[in-house]
Image (tube, rainbow over all chains, first blue to last red):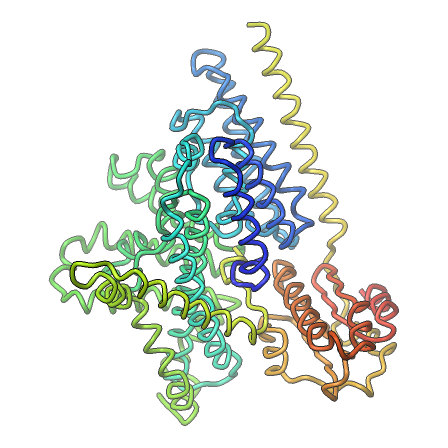
Length: 454
Length: 163
């Protein structure tokens, strides 16, 4: 099941919210149990055959976590403790690797829940999270349905803090609904229509330069609205159940450097690699050579995390190259370039990188890049280019506007103008947006989320 | 102290039992989800041999996108035959995937199409509705089949035999 289906919005979500909020807050165990049951149902609805491996993995990590918790870090026990954490991490990574690099059907969400499991193990090992051995907390942390399938990859220490707090009053419900509707808008009205525009172009065997540029731009915008839309919906859903998650995207296409881009794109994945790989390896507090090595490892792993083809490895190295270049060679010199030019250059680097996502091989990616420069011999633009541009111009303009905070600012100016909050205006706008989304969903065919394949 | 030691031993045993279970699941997955090297046209011939093709017409790539939301370029092979008239419910979609990671996407697209068709016929097309109810969605390794026909089960079996 995905968030952008009618059955989720009109059946699963209202029923789960109703049951959860009907249970008194003081009965926190019952609430967690209800949420856990709904999370399992959510997973079963989408990928029932993989539930077995998910549940075994959850239990394995729980047992490993308890072993690590019980062993002291001194002497012989310290060695056993270290062995336990290495074993747990090795088994988790091996299972992920086997599924990802064999031709087995990939269990839905395995890349995301494996990273959650590793966070659980590492946070206990490093003493970042107090753990009382409560299996319900651990299971809910990994299985919590808003984040189970496609993140954000929340770290155990952050989630556990909220699990042990009393959630007597949910202050986040309204902002959760707001985020969910915005996410739905991004997915249903922007990403799905951009997907149609992109697929019209990607099915062409030959194309003029402008058509290839448009294809790259449509895909880059689709990927952003698809994934950030999903993340917004996930965070919104979590808030409706009283849990807070940090945002996963922060207007990444307004970044003025590749390093800045990765502080704004899939923030939770970047934070995971920073906290569990980069910093334990020494981070910035070591020689330049070691910093270089640490960054290279992180970017190779980031590429491998995304997929099992050379494209993803190349894409990870490609981004790593620019991050390293900015850090060691360019530094503050880049500030001499106007900000708008830095933003455009960063977007160009990011957009070209996405070509390796939508092409089946590195050769095909470079062929596509060649097509952008007219290698098909059809010139820079032809009638097809003009058709694809004019036919999707409104969508393109709307998408570009939505890459920035302009609409949010307009909304705030309208609602918070003057001394009074005009919340009814905001509510009406959200209802209208929801109706538009639902109307679009009723007529549309099934459309999955791009990041589910990871 | 003794209790702690016993608990740690118990946890160690449970942990390795769980690892064994994961390994067993993986072995089962490898044996039950084999990649077929069968040629796409051969599988299609086996599937279409048992079907009444006179009630269907071949669908273009655009039709596959419209009805299923799938991009034909993403697959090794894909062929759609869909009803000639609005009152028909006979349909076959055969897909050979490049990657079994696409199984879930293809399966969801097929289920969604089946649901849409059932909604279309619900209430007035009793015969078509019943046909869709007993339609077959079969995902086997790198191949996937959706068939809605009077003899859907037999076609599904022919598909399995051809792989």
